[in-house]
Length: 176
Image 1: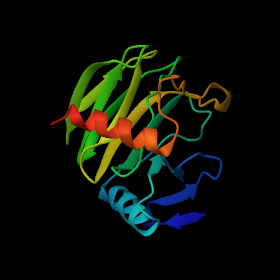
Image 2 (image 1 turned 45 degrees about the vertical axis):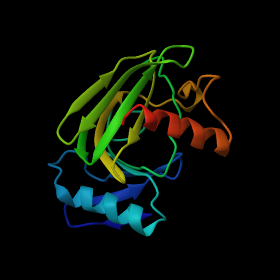
Image 3 (image 1 turned 180 degrees about the vertical axis):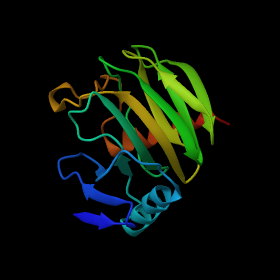
Image 4 (image 1 turned 90 degrees about the horizontal axis):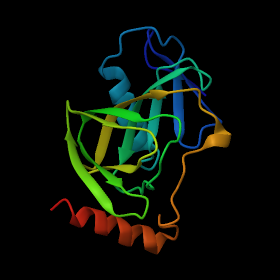
């Protein structure tokens, strides 16, 4: 799918990605509110789906930069990356990062507001979850993406829908 937002912004869908993802035809340009508005509109017209715009050339790039929209209604499993960390900057909304030890105990909880940055280094179990109905953030990390080296999901991470709802409620209880 090709989407022309303007003469400047042409997006191509990444049909191989696990969540809705798009690449800019020309990633070497200034990014403005048109991309943010695209994310909001796309999510709204597609059952409040999560969506991202990749600013790197492709999944083989040595460095990945993305603008991501996540919805509060969705569940984001705790995970770890063995080869890279995550750095995010909240663009719109509010989110929280939970960091866990290897047994699933919360070791750190950080609320991240618009304009704030947060970094998680490699080999740390973590999850980012929106506190507002939607959170839009800039994410940067090392590439390339290797589907064989997916993020590691710990054994204590919930798998059933009932367990996910219970775990999410448990996490939200730490914010109040």
